[in-house]
Amino acid sequence: MTSINIPGTGPTGAGTGPIGDVTDRALRVFATAARAGTFTRASTILGIGQPAVSHAVQRLETALGTRLMHRSRTGVELTSAGQLLLDQLEPAFDQIDLAIAPFTTAEPAAVTISVSTSFASWWLLPRLPEFKRAHPAISLRLMTADSDFTTNPNDIDLWIPLGRIDRPDLEIVELCREALIPVAAPDVATRYSGDPTSLLTAPLLHLEERYESRFDWPRWFAANNIDVPDRLAGDRSNDYSLVVQAALDGQGVALGWEHIVADLIDDGRLLAIGQPIVTQTPFVVLSSKRKPLSPNAAALRSWLVAELATAT
Image (cartoon, rainbow, N blue to C red; front, top):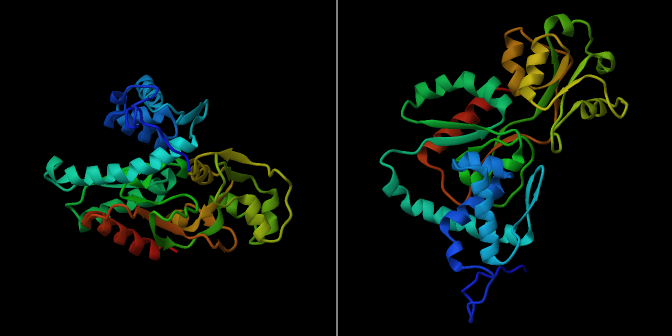
């Protein structure tokens, strides 16, 4: 098991740096940087400069006498010692925050929910007025994240991830099945039949993700027992909102998540081509087991479950 030597705590008080550098602030900056994945993103969350984040982490590493993070052009990666420290800090910070919460606010805190940009744009925002009418006293804080690797449930109340998340510290509630169906603007969709092979010659719109994708065109063709080349032709974007918009603009055929494109199909702005494919990976909403949901957060979760149960 990896151990961390905190100077001044041993029999001789030996260490590589002063114990005064191991402050609550330094530890919180480190934890935020670890969750955010980059110093730049951590600086935005904390409202301080990026050099201040880097300096705080460096001073903490000097004080502890161990490397906590590896830096690269794409972000930061925790060392084994850094991961151990983060695992020990998070429950401690949760207890501190819960202890002082009654003294820091006179009103219930806003419910923070993290979702993808596409879910926020095409499903959640059009329905929020209905939620606010039913719960006018509940304030919401909507955060968008298009990578599960930069979201930490200890910083939020509810989280709808993009992919499969299996962690023992999370409570998982199913929202809806994952069903996918090709969609396109009417003038494009009418060129193709319900036969999946007809889409081999279609202008496909692809979602490119930095990490493993949830479902994509190669998997869709494979599910229909159709062999495809290693790289399918077509336009690509790393933002699913842009993929949907391109389909609306008549630029090609998108692979639509049923609950996101259902309203657009009902409005006639998109047409479905063929039948949906249902996977074994449902969409879920997550929350941390380390802190109980507030009544307001529980009300939002119940509303999401009820609304999405009727979406597919």
